[in-house]
Image 1 (tube, rainbow, N blue to C red):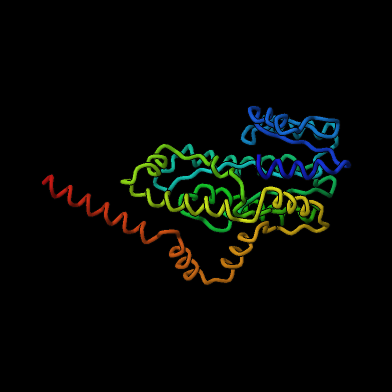
Image 2 (image 1 turned 135 degrees about the vertical axis):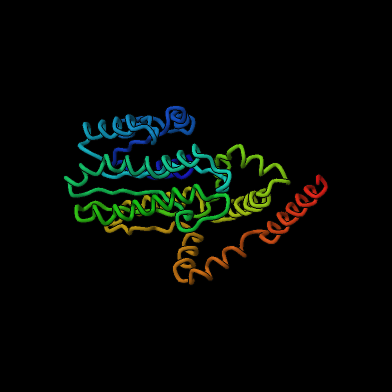
Length: 294
């Protein structure tokens, strides 16, 4: 539950709010294991962000009891690790529905009442992956790019009604959550088989991600504090860069000429020369095998 649980714990300190925490049915028991239990002001409700019926049920119940949602924090997310060539249609579809379509659909359900009240807060937990894409993380970045675009458009659409929209963008967080990334069958073979053309891509990016996750100073708790601070700001900004690396990436991408940005990014990929050398060796071996069969 990572950042989501940290946000919940921050908000639970405020006795003046009613808090509704949601999770998939199979994840709800974890709240009790983590010491979070229901009370008059804290509800636990099942919600699969991809399930329209559950989305409508939760929002309807809140509107019936409290008259509407004052603030919505969308934290649902999943990460697929794959390269473009190995991505399946099912992986692409699920990545987008969990990280983009589901949160946007849930937001659409709470907006009518916010618009009528002329107030409301929408906070989308995005990612530095929504600013720039990395090898083996293309599907994830595509979903976050979509969330960035959809939420920015919504910011302009609902601002005249007094509804504020913010995107919170963490970068690397010191958390084991990245180990929960879903690796498809073809990508799994690539990570384990040194003879796969994309093996070096996964091996080097795995080391980079592991190193950054362990050595960054950002934690789920520090990101949660930025989220809650954004929630309480009188005029919340569209984007909140929640970690130092997200801020660095934002400025680097914004002020570096595009050709130079792409060139620097490519040559800064960990072990990029070895990627090329490994694939050159594979190509030579394949050529030799083909000649031997003639």
